[in-house]
Image 1 (cartoon, rainbow, N blue to C red):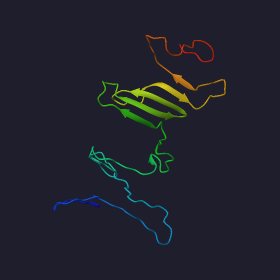
Image 2 (cartoon, one colour):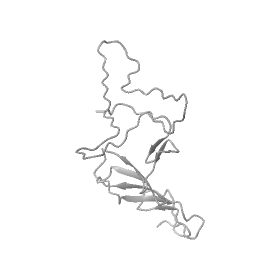
Image 3 (tube, rainbow, N blue to C red):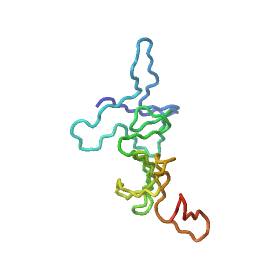
Image 4 (tube, rainbow, N blue to C red):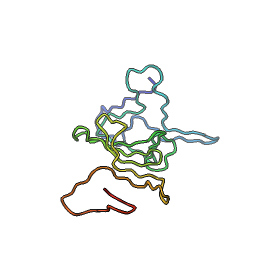
Length: 171
């Protein structure tokens, strides 16, 4: 065990700021620091594992998690509040655990210049349906591939677009 802390209050009274681990300041008075980490967790999955290793695990579903600044998943240099990066079609999935079977999961994905919004099965299959795609290539050329909407729409009213001919056609 590297570092174990147990914090308990036994004498009553009020604690105004309770912290299990507090790295309140890292100060360099002279010299050069090339990398500075308040908390650094190295490889926790080395060797034989009989469980799923977690670098950070918060089990209290009622507790808030706070990060000041930009957060990166798959990148060490996030340029926005949340940046998800990956070499193979990075995806963010939103799951509604109360929805019916195979209707729980919506995703947003970026894959080789194409942004997609789609759904997937309860098995979280990589080949889910992508009813909305937007390509970053083709604008201003004869091979336009901008916005694509797939699927069917039905309506009992006469509201919406009905474009059946020309450069933009909805069938």
